[in-house]
Image (cartoon, rainbow, N blue to C red; front, side):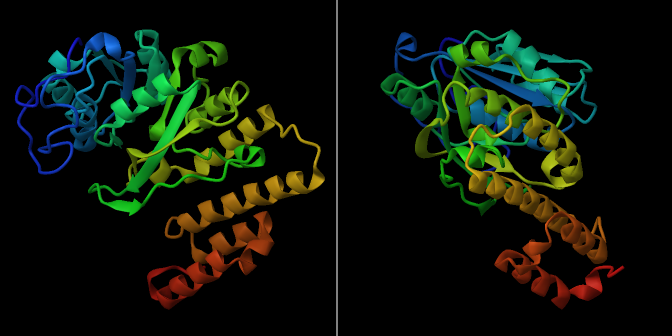
Length: 329
């Protein structure tokens, strides 16, 4: 792709708002020269998420970025995803649809076909914010950094913001609890990818966290961009929505791979406690799939002190008010 797509050439928008009918940033007037901008390679792994996929694709193409390489690796979808991809294939660098071994393999396959200096992936239910690519490229051009991260909002199935993104506290110990950045808002240089190696295809839920733990061996924190970069969608059919328990063993495996290097006993205790409180919040999110008594029992075994946390007390008060809707045992 040598120039950004003209909005008028793309398939007609079916909805209002970004990235459907709103004009993209940098898409009017004289376009920036291609050679002035580093190539950005974006990969989208896709499997049976046709209801969100077109929005993802348009949020990439309508950036209007002049040196874009966009690759979609579909895992053999049967829900209409392929038809959506074909609508936009003239603007894609490469796409395929065939059975694969999962999301991490699909992303690796996509990046193996890419050539850009700047790399990122966007899942088929997430979206980029207007102007994200220009903001990211300008940050790389003006800063000596291996990777960049920016504000990522959490949105619901309809695209409504449910939690606004913010910058998390950048402390080394927090990396050993969970990633301080949300994946859709992260971009990195190919040089960093070559240093760290591709995604671990044996992981299906925590492969992004594993990759970032390798990133921090070379640069502990990304260059933070305090601008809206992306949206992370939470919906019932997403891994985050339906497979929370499956994250736990993979995250434990990542913890074992990258032990905390510090010697401060207080920080080690803090990490241990925060990991267990993270589990407690997972159990709380599964109320309905688990009974209330099962949730409470798991929290008691994992982190009994969490029963005194304000967050838990507010949660249990709210649930008990609606106890008729939940099984108690």
